[in-house]
Image 1 (cartoon, rainbow, N blue to C red):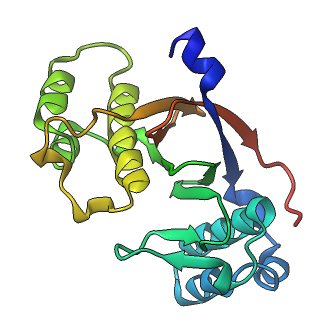
Image 2 (image 1 turned 135 degrees about the vertical axis):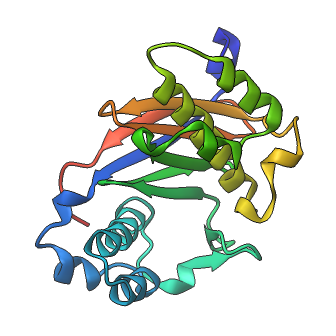
Length: 212
């Protein structure tokens, strides 16, 4: 991003929550988060999955004030959004021990992935062919991180676009064009990418206390 673009750029806030911080907080948080996420928490049987839904509900309540279901709406593809009375956009993602929330004044998508689960066979099922072929030729010490950046960039675009995997990025070699993407490494094990049509800078906030 050029100097001039930086001056004009939006700021996208990214809130990073380690779900281990939620231990022992379940009952308290379930009483204040939006019922949509509390019900998902109750339906899920896997402890980590329960914490992910609890973490998503907590981040929305704390940083966007979402504590009621009527504050949320869902598009035809199932993407959660704030209701039309609020001029704010958000995107959620989770992987391993982290749940993350991105908030922006423009449509935004964010994705986090643990890079040790990625390989070329996995990437081939998602990436546009020209993008995949370039990665296939790479040989360096940070291959996993490079793969993670590619995977999360594509998923972030799918989320920002609002259609998710209802479209197939492999069918369009120009899929990545027109998007601004910023990525960062988390704990050397995870890659995070954020996407928007508008130029932006990231403000990353590590959530240290569980208060609303």
